Length: 264
Image 1 (cartoon, rainbow, N blue to C red):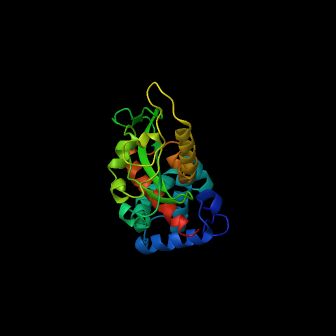
Image 2 (cartoon, rainbow, N blue to C red):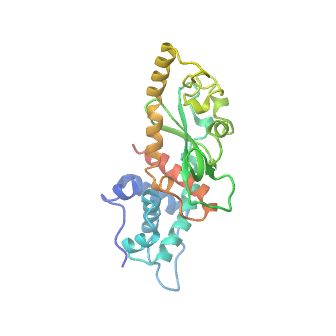
Image 3 (cartoon, helix red, strand yellow):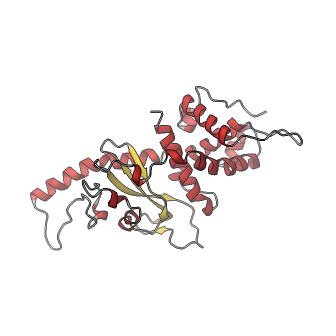
């Protein structure tokens, strides 16, 4: 018999969710996607709540399906079906929790940085390999406030896309003409607040060096925001499921992160 995984005090370390957030999530998903009554056949191996938690554990810890099958006392196919069933439902049900560019306060100074969310080396797919990171994946642009609070994440772009090109296509810069977002040297030339580049054959002045030091200090929360987002290990340790499901999974995880943060 599958272990009792109803919401309780022991959900945080496997899902990152408090008991209250997990209960609220299950309520939303059960209301939007009620399970039809089963009149024939074998009883389902897992309850709806267990399937939802299993899906979160998978994305949070990026455990193999075989390991999850042992933990939940079911077969691997039940695990696979639960993940395939609930990942797109999470993205759909929590869509309103994902901020768009138009939702952002244009008067605030934001920190912007790019990150690669890796996947297996899909040789038949062009554009996934990032020369900067030396691996395949998808490019995400991430924005946070000066305290490191995540406020926006872009749609994924191919891993080979340069950060400057990726951010131009999001429309974020059009929404923040003044004050412009703060970023690293990879975004130079886009009107953003970036460190000064060393001139060819020359050196930075002491004033420029101090300016760069100040910018880099202020940018530190941006890296922390990305690190917090990647506590969803599926975005950090390599995506194993079919590539066509990766963008939808990214959307589901971003929605889960903003939903979780709404309980902070």
